[in-house]
Image: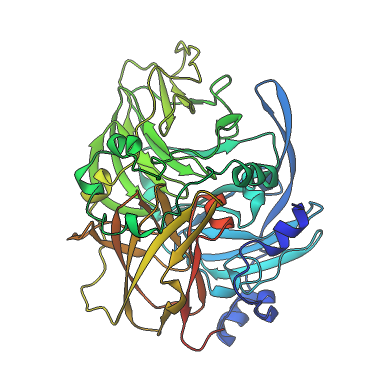
Length: 492
């Protein structure tokens, strides 16, 4: 497998689309005139950098501003006006995960924009939208080599609050190239395993909600592999590019409040965030406000984000914020520390395995801004499938995902495989309106986890024309077939 072949062929879709729109996102003449008189764009560059991983140097990608700052922080309600350039020696493209740009600016190779060439600069202009914790990343295998960065949109209220903001980008890291990791997955696929869309798996959609995540992890059937939590054992798990051998220590105030903006940018690893003995409230998911939930641990799948507000004790101290790897003892994280606090070493392996992610929290989430109630104009049913013998993944029922502008759309997704899949829809936010057949007024978000044998119903308004990816945010599941497109009538 050759790197160039993957970069040029990965996630392109069934047919190549025109690329003229890639030069300029869809805008009105009035909007074009406004852009011409606007200040200079923010500059963002794809480049190389070197980080230390367990005493070894690693060359990785970076996505930085001219002053070296990783990622972007923007104000809600303003224009996203960014000049993206590349100083690496291979093609790339960046997806603005959590924003809803016009289709031409979405950042999926050849859908419709061409890959950004070495030394090329491309300008993106569109409304940034409301506030939220978002991120940006390559929509190629380059994502595995840390081509990702935070994309924070702050509201006026955010800036007024008496609280410190701490952004944490989680990742999984391997010294092996992504192509080699994928090759090993395909070579090591379970021999003789039954394809997960086999008839024996059908009719089990109600099983998941009767079992805990740990029950599912140990479940096996004749001829069927048990639930597989982790395809890859990585060399390291990172929080802001660092392991717990040398974690980032963030200085905080005694008795203060901290807003943790946590982004799971890992390619194939889910985590549970453990805030230890601190008092915490989950206040947003995927950049969208929710009715606050008090707790000390919160699950986060690949592509998802959590905003957690924590209160620090008046006596101060050092407070680890840990990300526990699902079904394993590995962990990473940062440390919040007040002045003079004793910061002690934290082992990178815990005493117990991290929790298996399920839908318990998802069932409790309630949005601050739910969608207006209206009847669905069109409904679709999809089934997530997998063949572990060949390490291929897919979405049954995806061929007819055609919508009309202005419609309310409902998509039922069932997971007939034995792995969990965080499903992400580009260009829109959706509301979770049912879980395992039970209607709920769930969270508004852009990425939802589908554990094995579970089902969810997503509702969204077709208000952003294009051909939008709907895919698993496990990089290697997406790269081997678990990607569909929501296509507006008349496009493509």
